[in-house]
Image (cartoon, rainbow, N blue to C red; front, side):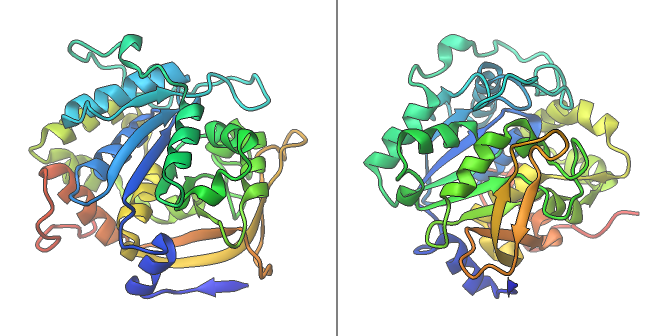
Length: 344
């Protein structure tokens, strides 16, 4: 097994390759409340990174509703200049149920949003064409963060086999590497929704152009006491927190003791790589056949030519500080003196 425990400096180099922060970013999302929180965290921190576009896929909701949800997030942030492109309205090769009600029927808490955006506010270019165009225009410069099923990415690869090679890096939230699962035994939501797309993605990744994978288990092992989420973070005097509280209220009511934040962690891997404490190099395959095996992630840790960098461990205390700083102001000054102690 190629197992790395990296210092913050080395880890930053490992994740971003040539710079501490990528210059250009695309977010691919299925538009849930967790995605909203990840987008806010990523955009509400100072950096020299430019968000080029946000593309949407099916997952929590259909791609149109996902785009409308993202437009709501951007309006709350005051970042309406960021183009939002609707991607695939169905999965890569299946016509299975395309939505989840974990975050409500609309994926964003079903609360009333004043003067909500409409389909007319969605950029006209298809999300897959946006991915292909921008990566072609800026070869080797774009970091792509995928927060939902990877349908758009699979289609982009199918249309242009050099797509992954021309990215700066790709970070994916998905998969179950220890058989935990949250849909069927051993399968995680994003990969189970579109296993053919996930399979194609990893078939085209390589040691030279790997996928940085934030699996389900890492988010579970980075869980946070629900009391901290509702009574520390949730009580911040911030319009952004108020928005997220409304967006997450249905899911929080269903959450017992611990709150998990997989999409937020995936964004963290990009913008705060020094918070990552452990990475495995491995060969990853995704099964698209069978019934129980559809979406199962197979991991070969003995491979010396692994196509994946699996994020295994996050510094949870720093993650909590990161969330507080990102949501309580429009600017990061320091991470000192922020209460992230465990709540009883």
